[in-house]
Length: 559
Image (cartoon, rainbow, N blue to C red; front, side, top):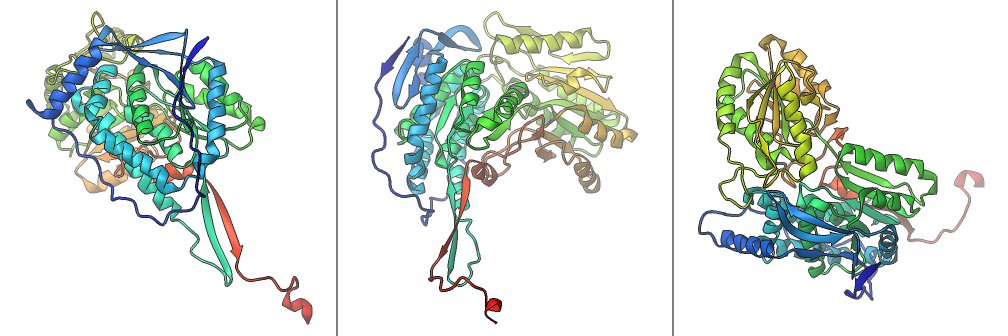
């Protein structure tokens, strides 16, 4: 049924776990790359792209260091050139999924007891490998596999992945140093930040290479073992990142790389009593299904599974009459249309007061109309294709709805073409219906819907922004009036996990704006942050009495 290729041997010796006294290297955000014409990196990326286009790469299932392939073959295609096969992979059947879970359980204890400085070194080395040796290749996999422009690939696959790993190590060290500050005479108190008892299942999305690396990387850093299901449409970049971690010293079996059918994978992990947690980014319906499955099986688990999820968003830009209108235009274009609106945080609904709409409209429509949509490797492209045919058809259906709805007017865009790649031109829809479905349903594509309100309806519009969508991921308020900005923020306090003042709703930076939302957008555990790091631990309080006990009675009993 499947082929096997031998891999590396497992860890054979482990030192006892102790909270670290070491100090890690100082961390900072990774600088973005230079893609100016003639730059060495641009030349390297172009060579990698040409090489990848010439050959379909094989991506295996990897369990305990051994590579497998099954007869259930799948392919990853280049979204902006969908007749080009970038990678070939196969789905793991349920038997292999259970083998991968068993591998996690066999290797968990050894990895958990590996001292933190050695676990941390793996991820710090991986960050350095991404920054140097593999920078061009990782960029190329995201440019081709996910149709990211060079800038977007650099922000994601390179800079954010590096930041995730370096800052995760920093936050882990901060957590380990959180120890009881008070000890009674003759007593020493401390906390052991253990990994979770069991295995973690990580499930990644297509739109961020970095998120895939974080979803399994953060639990692994904290001493957990992970079965990782990569997204089909981002599998090549996910596998390269996995290989980089292996080169950095990640032991076999600590993280098992298991492409699989979604429902088959979900059923397998939920059925196991050793499930300790799910690390997820994807759609809200999928996360709800996983949560429901865990809840239905709760009595079977050895421990209560931790569920960490970041799901959908219907993110807003709210404009006040006092706003800097040039900032509004540029920020809205960047947020709505970079990476074709396929960021969880992308702005897809915009609320503008009537008094400034005419000025905003002219600049917004003109600039959007001139955006270049083309192959991701073309340095002149502002954005490229959407991820696949299913996404293309979904976005297309919303555009056609806007064309047929009398309350909607398409101001620019509204065109699409899937003859070569899955191209949808950035589209702006003006609606007079405050309850239009384009304002409350997640589209996940380059469609921005604008609602214009009367200036004297600011308070009711703020309430509308808060109540229109079930999501609570990101939002932005553009306003120069500090008192109104503060009041509006208070009213929109729970509308977004990440809220921006006079800036676009996208672009959170690791270590600066920890990302995550609540309501239907997820569990808001904030990747990467001290909060998320602690989620993948099970703290054990230890009390050690340093002097002998000499009696078992209390003084008042002796009177």
